[in-house]
Image (cartoon, rainbow, N blue to C red; front, side):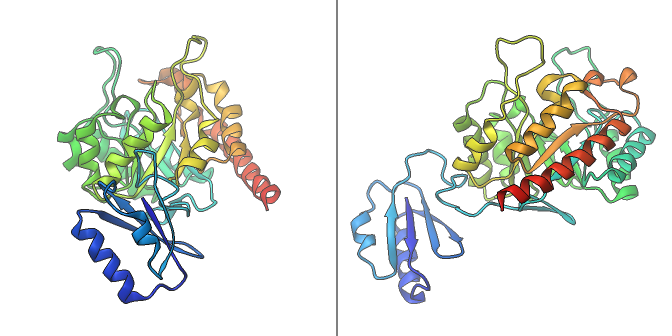
Length: 337
């Protein structure tokens, strides 16, 4: 249920309403927009008399929400959420470029790539220390050593770190990580979602390979219900009948999510197709469709990469793409104004 308050509601009446609702076991989330204040009521609102609330002098309107996700719902939070990470932010009209290797392979490798992508306009460093792989014989990442290499790259460049958390036991190791990534395979690992919801670091949730929009948003709801509202959604392609590409990138997700949620939307064109030559056009399409940022894999020697080399761009390719993306973003802004 959403309670829309009139402009400048009487503080005493507002507090009286909040107290009454809390006594009924309702959790209240307040959202202040340009014109109105909203109270998002989470809990069993079936026994709350909407007409009784509507009759209050401070109330403009009362709406019942049908969707099972409340905190992630744009109806609860009409203004777009902006997630602050270090000296940068995700959302708010800018284009965030997260770039780096699929897997951290050495200190020299990740530092060199970090310096290159920063020079090209990236504002965040992505890199895998722990890697979920389909085959148990594939490279699984350097683990804690890989995290240390990412920290060194951060010290060298100032770029905030985005990396994947695979298991609850790894969470204590992520104290110097800036954005915790929940991978597609863990999108519905509810214990993991609850755990990252109880800490304050921003969380980026990748869409599961066969997840619906509602299932994806319910994963975000798990994190937000724990108290962490710094959630980012990442579209990385879904599994379809097509086998030519690794996955099928769902660009329709961007406008659909804009309608359904206030959370920032990132697109990963690298995992979407598994082919480096498709990263450029899909990244351009994602920016034109209105995403808040891109997650792009960059490797200094893709042919010899230990993980996902075929979908990785070389630093010079990323540099050329980044320039086009930033120009396109400015153009999109001008035609929207």
